[in-house]
Image (cartoon, rainbow, N blue to C red; front, top):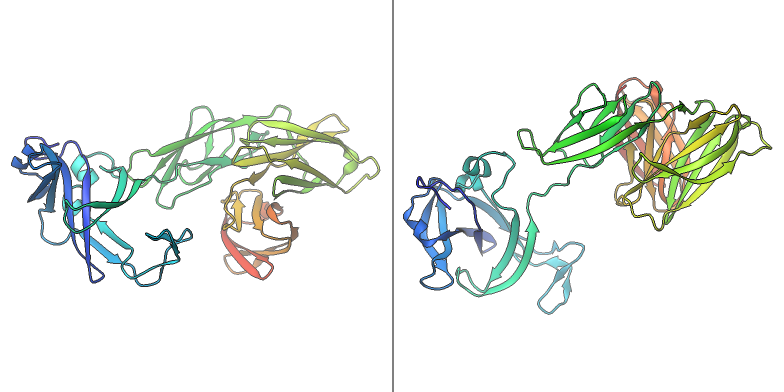
Length: 436
């Protein structure tokens, strides 16, 4: 729809018809859906090229072809070379047979410069720099290059420009006195920016970036912008709570709290260094990292006063959630109650990601979430920016997802580090940032 000056005030359908000759994209015709009498208007952003086709010869509505006001092509493109891989699902031929590869020019791709064509979403429609006049894509093939030729195959509809919406989590959903919680984006996009806010809590330091530290309970909100200058794209919210009469589990009394996912069972393991101080344990689970429920109570081993390893299992076959959080509630002989750190198990992480670092940046502790296809020995190193090894990692991994807490990170100075792990004969690495 146009105004009197020829400006587009309401977008409609647009069709790009691509023609290939000798493995080269030779032409693209761009057509927009209009009312026939709009042809008497001189568009402000583009020119009519003289073609108009509707359902019938005298149709009131149809597709009119357009061209840029400046010379030169407004598109680029290329065809596939011979034996281009057709992807994991292969290519379905007309005979319903499957082909592993495309033949020459069987697959083509092209790009369109909407700014040159006069349909830039900002200059044409104003507002959001990340806006777009189009939100669905339909792909059709025709029996010839003619615009009115018979339609053949369809692929539709495909959503355009729907980037993953922000999702956040925390390493510590419950605060004790003089404690910090790190809230982070679990699916950061390199081109997105993130701004954090709270109405009743307190953010320590900067409120921008993929993660923040907070030191008060409250509701924390992150707003995702696809790029600098864009309008808000998505938000996510998390609640940080406070535990009354809470004390952090003494550093000299617990170690090696870990969780391992094997098929439909989570195995929990922890070590009590001074077993004589404990009377029992609650194994607790949460699906949101905030609200925990007791899975079982275990009495402390009364026959060993010092170092004792404890084990528990949790069947998560019927758990319909993306992640599970675990902690151990410890009852002491003095009558006090304390909690372990929280371990997060991702229940739907792709196997292609061998390990992740949580949280990252690191403040006072770090966990490695490692996926192993088989039982394996873990050997790892943490290397500082000068190449010096500052920590060695050793352990035994079960087949499945393993979560391992790395001790001593709180003693490392701020800076950039590299985490190297060796599984069987393969070596993997990731960057880690220590920021206290």
